Image (cartoon, rainbow, N blue to C red; front, side):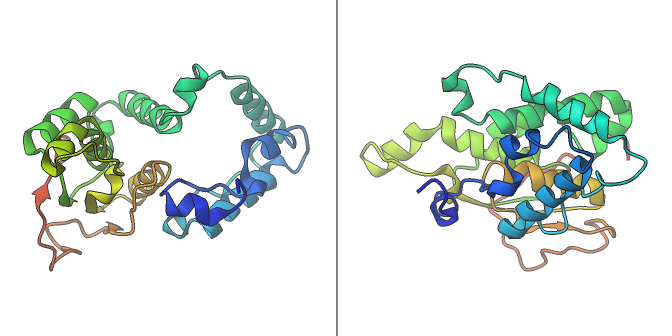
Length: 235
């Protein structure tokens, strides 16, 4: 049943309620209420996805935002073609999100290091640590790139699990690791929660902590199997 929320959550697939789906929002793009409609869509997503409660921006109904501009942007995005059908069936939304994070970081210059580590650096760190399974901790997790790459690492090394179990094993990589993190910047923490949620990665143990990791460890009792960290080079 494509409308049964539980079928999505059981497979760790991000669920979007009907009142927040793109087709519905785009159908209202020309209405003067489009700002409120987008905010209501954010509320609906948070209601059905507890890990995102209080995370999504609900600022589009503000009077200072031109509603025609919002509607025009929605229609522009609605005409974008995101690759072939095969490409669309993969993690296309996650890749788009990752692309924009990288572009925002470039635009910010040195400040971008606060929330984004270049993907080549992330890949190198993950390949060195080889987090096949267990608890992965990042004490300054930024927008969550280390966690996303850990999941990609597991997916790309499925042969490891097949050898280990002596059979062609069908497995969900998200069942192999659990992630723990904290981030001092609230906006960056929100980016991380969104980044992880659209990939179905449980972010309940990714905490916002404005006192920073060294002053207030929110995971004092954690016995992590892997610690991945790239402290912001600009701090």
